[in-house]
Image (cartoon, rainbow, N blue to C red; front, side, top):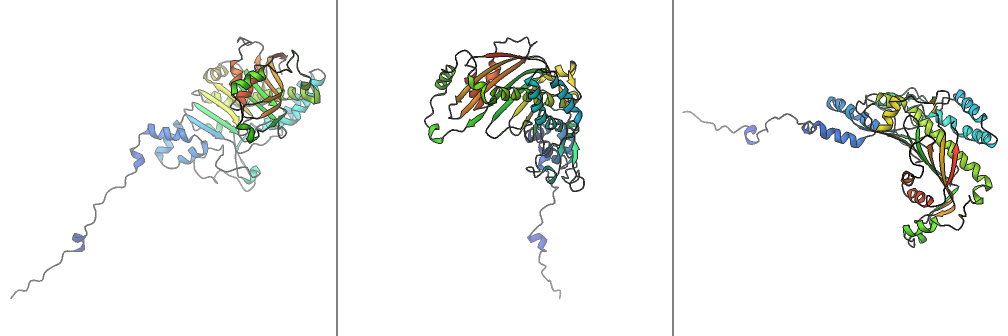
Length: 395
């Protein structure tokens, strides 16, 4: 007699395994245009370098980014004495007190200006403990932050051209230095903004011998901005001549130093940008600024093209673009109170253009918009005061 033994179903039938499927990379579903939009929002050159090692696709897309930001960790000086002697020889041809002023300016800023020629991606220890390692000017395609470093205490040098050589279609470039070149005392305000083509197009300088921050109790009682502007524009101390406070306690000398040193800093930055401008012909906008907000050099597409086709008047010894003969318009207020309660002592605004400029001298609309608030308001208040005209020879 046959015995039938019931057979239970194997576990695989009770708990069937899910069908095997290939892993899906959801980034592969995104079109290149979306990824490029994301990369352009990132901007930072070191972060983009890290993106390059994620995949071959990212590696091929990053060079197509058109918006790049280069943040420089630190700069070093090459201690080139030839630059110092060159500018000193120029200052020797100036008359009287200007020689001393030039020596004062040169001693304080020539070496920092030479240092701008070397952009570094380096260890924190070699930068004297500078900030974070996330803001390096080094574009590391390998993605290994330690791979490009030398032995302990060493540094890896990267010129601006080397940093940006992997990008083919840059349209908007912003380079940010770790600090301004001009050493100023605490409490002193000095800001400048310059535009260049093949040479200086215009420059605006705003300075104050001291800044008194607003009292929180007074901010709530601040009057309307328009009222303040009108009141400040018709000060009783403006009797047709520069107030005595402009000359006393070294005030005039200080403002001459501000003007000359700002122009030297701007022309040095412009000189350093030549290789980048020559190599990246797709640029529409280039900004070279610093984390302190002290100075900003700007160039638009027309100005960039002008530099490419017109010979540059530059001094290779002093490593800066020569500054042409200038016409300057100056506004001064012994005390300037802003709507938010901030008080600027010895507030000075200088608008500069080349003597050969074809633009109307009376056109000062560009001056008021040179700075961000609250200094935009300060500039608008100052231009309502009496204007003083000056001239300066090329240097």
